[in-house]
Length: 359
Image (cartoon, rainbow, N blue to C red; front, side, top):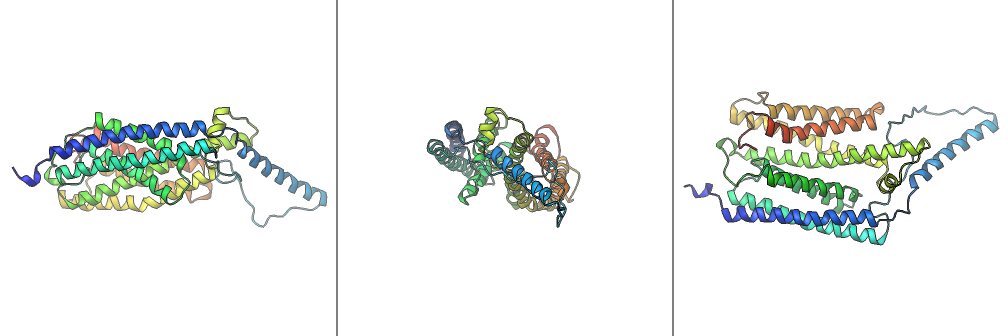
């Protein structure tokens, strides 16, 4: 047997233990995030309603002044405002999940600390998996999944380290990471082993690693987009004189304003889109080396391109004034849905040249 190709069973077992341990710590982080939302003040609400009333009063005062003076208001640049346009309401960001209270913030800090610990333990599991077979730890769906969730949490923690206001992502992130790891360790689990010869290439490190990074960042953008839709609907209901429910008010008032969420999602998706373009190009180059052609309409190739087109359409629409806001947000979610299908659907339900190791 080739010793270089042998599997180190001790390291493989260590990797499994670390992954399960990270799930336990993520679970503690999940409950800490729940406590952060529960213990956060519910009294500091009405910021959105107050801001919208202030905007309405300002507009009414201006109209009254024009009427009293008997003059005609002349706008330097006529502006068309639509409900779907993000940022048309001057609404402040919410205080966050902690609600601005000491008790809520304390639980939030505990949740972040547990998330950092879980990230470190999971990353150790990924590294141990790689060392057990002396190759990149993303040769099958199980390995891709554990690496993907690790990178997603790492990207979130990096934004926090850069002092970005993203703690509102924490609860959803930890929840989906637990689901991802749960599926990985049950349905998608594959024993640590060597890969088929076609995957023994330095392009495995380049092409698949960039795909994982893109997916992790696209995920953060999708979370922001989804919450934007809820928050925008909440602001629109207040602006039209409606009264949201108590639970919706408690949650929505703590999130950033719809404008902030929309801007966050756009910048995240725009920043990683060039890397996704490189991912497809790198895959084509690898295909040329492995199969003798750069493009063969393999299902994975097709859906990677569909995802690229969807995100390109979103970015183009988002940069066009008439497609800002909810319409562009729907496109962003469709684009991420394409990425998810490329991640799960193509690998599990569709057979192609990328079907090397089952799941």
